[in-house]
Image (cartoon, rainbow, N blue to C red; front, side, top):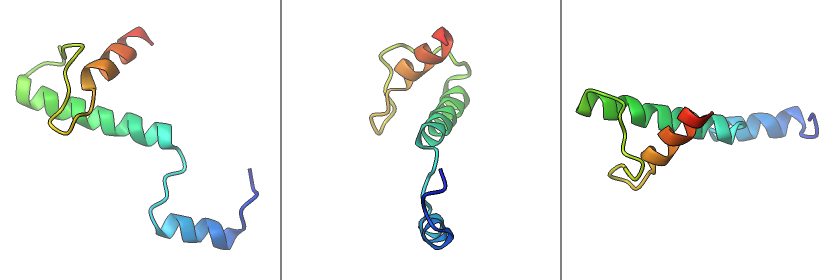
Length: 67
């Protein structure tokens, strides 16, 4: 939108600021699916499956299938 000065934008980026939070979340879930496939040999994730840290991977996979 151009409302932030270049200096403020740079400060945020130096902190690792994520501009597209939705994209970052999608990428995180894709990584979880890759790890699931490596462990289970498929992408047939149960709807109620949660990762060890509580991420609802099954729900995310279902959402991707419906998209």
